[in-house]
Length: 473
Image (cartoon, rainbow, N blue to C red; front, side, top):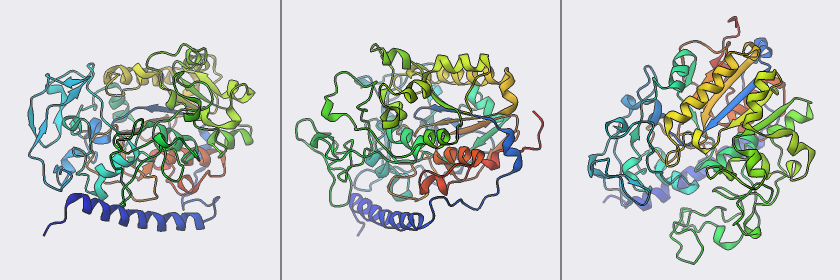
């Protein structure tokens, strides 16, 4: 007799947790300064600037599933999606958008990837989809990748895609390097993946208010919580053992004015990549669209407070000189390109309208924005010494056919696009190396000989396969 699907999920996740725990113990047992067995080429010193552009909420198959030569949708062995009892869905429902059904789409569609262009243009907005820590683990379903519809608030969109091959970023991918085996580092949404981008870590919030804490069943999965103020899905912001895994806001500014002080995440003290760079006297900055307005108390309606990971750390607290030096507005980034004063490491987080996030942003506007940043660098003297990494914080709730590797309790999550642009990037190359978000940290650490932050970045592959340093700028 077939086991009910929710029992199967519990068994799979207990198995995954055991494997991840063993892997974590092995990593913990390794020297934190240890490196994976990779040789750092001398040509890496030609890179004097690393620019990371961090976009929002698309899985790899949802943008590049039809990219020629990549591991895309044609390689999927199954499109099956099952309900919470393990029964295959026969049709997908009409997508949901802004409080009602999106009538641009048919009411019943086959359970298979479908091209959004049949119904809307890529400069139009779709609905959003849930993307949370425990929810994504349920969607991955122990590597089956068949729970995306069952564990979504918008199941009709989970298998939708835009073919971005000939969009502005896709053309960069054609010219330079597309990594088709790049996973977002942590399960769930933007908050935790922004943290992993800078510290390869999950923030702590001991004694968080009860309504923030996830309510889990005996299998470690969220269970509905009907108590007032609690997450209706049980997938709360804080794990029962005090780690912040879903959207929460810093005690430091900027944060939403309406959030009670007791719900603000306390200052964190773990080391970040900024700390490692500062220790060596290497310049760096996080540039965020709309930052100055948010600090001044009049944030843009689409400014995302939880996309500002450095603001959660004590050494960049309100009033510190370090905060003023390292946390800046995106307009300062563009000025630094023109003036030739770009720091060695620059993170760029576009404002909401430019970040490609479904639900509140159009894909084409964000693509053009990224291409404009790249063009500004390519037409400056900085180009000959710069590596640009374009990637996405997480999958945004959309399906991908490739099961992520098992590393630890945090992830990785699903595949996301990653594009490497540089005069030293290989040309017309698809990089099949297994990477995740912490590979960006590893690349920076390799270039400036920095001590790793955690076991995750210490043992990540470091993007070097994307480069050919024998090329001339």
